[in-house]
Image (cartoon, rainbow, N blue to C red; front, side, top):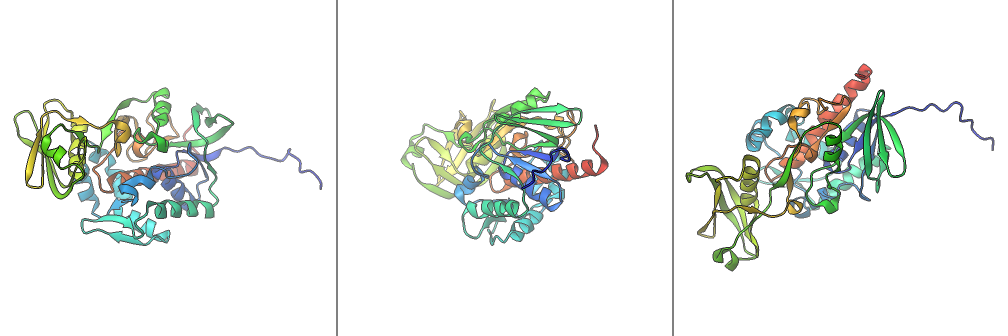
Length: 363
């Protein structure tokens, strides 16, 4: 067989390199495939969606089917105002349609939470994987990115084995919780090296350590009609959440506790206390001791919102560099909000990349 000459090979950059194959990265690749934007996905683990497989205790509450306005009210400031453009362009209803279009049968809970009917997160993750396979999207798994270097005509994305030339880069590496899933903070490190401010990362949506006989006596019990209230230094209620309260050997968890803890993490612990009611009794927590960040459902903190355009997700400091999902200082309550934010910010980034490519870039 006659050897093909290499003289006619033309070296071109990948239009979009997506760093991270979690919820935001998979959704970005799906949107890119739909919009015919050439992309390649890097994932440090051996499979995509490792953390997504854990969401909602493995059941994958992937969004909450409520209006964008209600969704933004639940997010609260300062996140809501910044996330509004992306969320309005990719509302929960659009996400529901998109997941259903992948052939996934869905189940809607009375409060709007959406799950795959199978009750298995793997159903959703595999559906995204099948789409990317069918669309021929290249996946570099077991391939951590070690550096991102801006160039005059794009970026050099480095790994331990090779480098890649890309016109645009989307960093979707997640936060710092559950590091065994691949969320180890490398995206924040890339951003820091490229001049972005990183807001301190702390645990969000996590339990509180409690030394109380009433709690210890109920260890292992779950109360679906619990309530938690955040109190300021004067005893005034400044935030409250109803729902599940779980008693653990080490303290309290459950949605009501998680949402209050996330509010405190975002607004500051100084002077705050919490009253948690369950099973006809209340516990006053004068010291709020969150469980470690590595156990948290979400990371509060990350790439500063001020350094990222909320309409496009593009860096205000490095043209062609984008961020989406939990790598950003953006988070929401438990109940499908954080996956929705990952999806919406990922879509905004890809739409912007498509526009940049069409316009010839901005170098």
